[in-house]
Image (cartoon, rainbow, N blue to C red; front, side, top):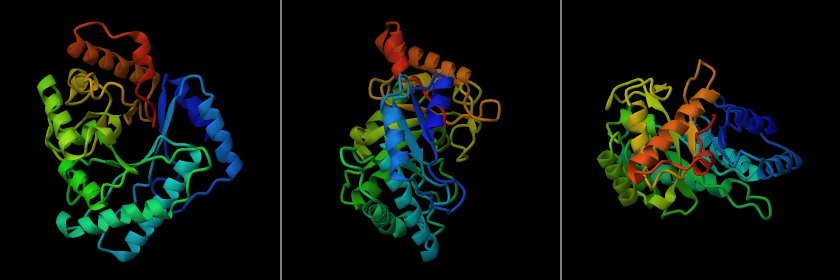
Length: 298
């Protein structure tokens, strides 16, 4: 995993996101203790990459009425968390899945209990290493997907008893596709208020920074490079520069030339960040603070 740090640094990233499991397979990965210790040391001593986030497998579905699929999902997420903790990860991002036509309210208790089971089953962090949070990601709202609104995510967290091990990662493309227009200062302010009311801003740990191919409210999950989609760099700037958002790690999940984020994508994100800060502060953003929070490679 150590080369992932250098791959991120090579494009100017200060935070990165990786898969610690094969994303579209149920196969569970384990790593020797010395491998994890070496990674933690490399990350702690890296001159530019500060945070490493993990993304759980796409196959996980905590809302499934199929008990076999649910059991696989809990086991997979638990192992993702185990590895994330051993790495000293800043968080493990997960898609909750779909209620498969059963309805959100009917599956809510199951989803919450499944998250708690996965967290409890995962091995504890090594001595002296803080447990990384589990970060629920919002969805674009297609079909029976769960987590299309902050009210749904908040309801899940409430149903766990307010488990402090759970946080949130917001995806800008998913927000846009689900109909939330944050592309102005007023819109960004509304979003921040909604997050604070539904889940609390302290649970928000990072966000995925993506432009959108579909239009606002299309309920389709298709990412675009910054300023090549329907949100645009200006629209993203309004959210990126908000005082409640500007210091969060921002993860690029854009296509680049077809192989993921490039250095030019990081620079485009940094420009949008600076413009956003200026929108609120009316003064030029300082380069030093911007560099610390540059969006990053998946």
